[in-house]
Amino acid sequence: MIAAAVLFTILGGVLGASLEPVSFSVSIPIAIMGGFILKAIRDQKN
Image 1 (cartoon, rainbow, N blue to C red):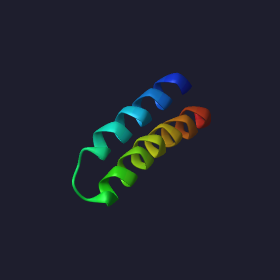
Image 2: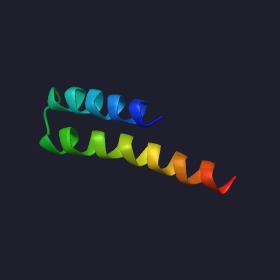
Image 3: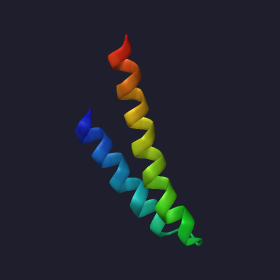
């Protein structure tokens, strides 16, 4: 799970770097990693 989170975050950073506004290149990897963190928190509660 950690390896997938790192891989998708890096891929999101590469994808975001090709987008025009700089805010997209910063926010896409943060959003992806945040999704994985939320999923890990929800899995721990169950």
